[in-house]
Length: 302
Image 1 (spheres, rainbow, N blue to C red):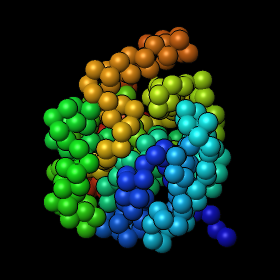
Image 2: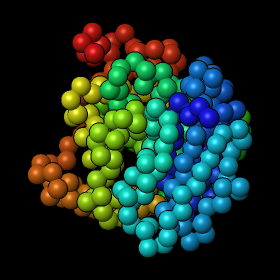
Image 3: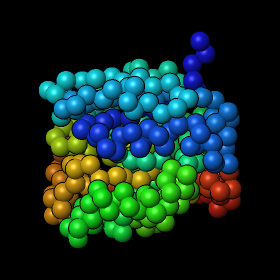
Image 4: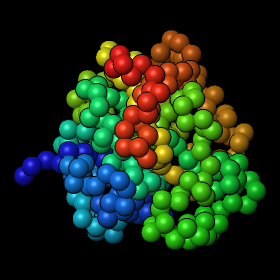
């Protein structure tokens, strides 16, 4: 059997409400509404790593239509081992390209996979970063303090007739960073060639604590610092966080800030330098254009 061009590794822990929607957003018919047809992507598989959910994920209950899905189940004792769970998913990936969802509660926009597939083919060592959004009128750790809850989130999705109206997700969401070309600290859906993930050794298991600590930030920084790598930011597509009681977004603003501070300390202890956001703009792939933006920095030097 010919392997798919793209493998998607999705990490989940106690996401009975959110995970099925995320997987629905990765189905071919959902992604087919974008300018890049699924056939051009080359096919994909989804690997769900169920990291110790109290009610284990059942593939038959969450599988989206027309895409191969596998579930790797890890026991409750493994729930804190985020890096190991992600690495197990990477080890099972068969595609030339791999995209990793460290947070399985994030919906994809309908053009995300096509945009990332094209961007990956623009450079032999592309590091493709996607933009993070939160569903709702504000970042969810703040919105929850004002009464934003799962029922309110459901009403928002119904207001755009999701999934049919998925192209309007940005209208009911708040970006984590206002400037899509500004300082970049992490990306929920991060894409590279499988060989690049392997060369980097996957996620560093020394990063621990709630939600994996700074493990996802560390991965992005290491990937972009690797010799010959090229950061490509996707404009016009992204992932959209759903409420699920997560470590950071499920906490209040003070708790979220405290967790970021703990992650910064952990990063400094392990890397010997401060944890700083990427300042490089990288190449800018405009999903609406289906190509790099003409003003992409360093484009001529690729």
